[in-house]
Length: 420
Image (cartoon, rainbow, N blue to C red; front, side, top):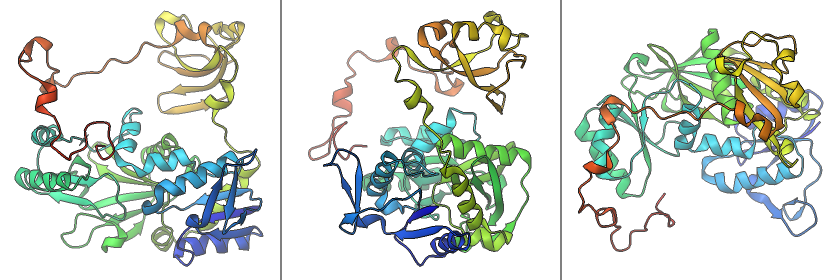
């Protein structure tokens, strides 16, 4: 296998360990500076230039893109994807994980435990948001930050309001998040490869520091995760679109709470804590996947007019409960079951003899018109008792949204650059 490692830090511990592990296994490997690429869109096929010359052929690439060059780095990875170079972490997956708000929005739809989180922009919405996450103390996070930078613990409401107002004044977007006191300055880093956790450690903050990052002086110890924590870590990584990931979780009173999914997890801390060859496991995983890369099912299967992928619900009204897939009537309608989801268990390519149960969810491919009446109704949003939506009749008639929220002179309006 010929593999490239995208990195601006060729001498860092992680990059050197990955390079050494690849060489020890007989692979050819090059460390390529991400910023030395040029994207060539002038020819008949997508191409890349590196240091002014056409990029040679590679079987796989492992992106390790720093936060400061996310936009350009993602463009390079996208181009490599177009060139059919295998990457365990897609450009979409890296982009999802790099934006904390976007990551939280994605995970919140999939029953992944997370600390209560709010995102607001107007000053008048800050206090209700603090109350909504459980009140002070709260954690204030910049949307883009690494190694604990941009994470602030506000001990009371006044401090939280002041911090958020200050950050907003500098055009920074922040998340307001519940402080999980029961974690006691500890968190868990699970290193995920594909569908399994290959290593895990607990990080503990030093002294009165609440951030447990190793770069903040935190200590580490190897741990063996129980099945709930393993399942949560793998699901979070895969939902984000990452096959090599570091999943950070808090130990909440009701189970694991995902804080962050890192697309470029460091190796030094976890290898030192566990004594495991995590770098070698990464290289082995990539080598095993190169010849049978994953495909974007939706892109590949929806090119036929009228056909597509849909998730079907096995409900009492469907008439499928208690029947096997063969007897369900799906195959007679040319509907192919790709996976069966039962609770938190995913059964790929289920056999026709498998009996269906109520609440099973089937990922299917077939004619969209034939699947239309089997698609579950859209979920209706549940209003919180303390945050009931406003009735239009309750809004004063003289209220003008454009007057109340019009940007001041020199302040970009909604939808313009700088307003996000």
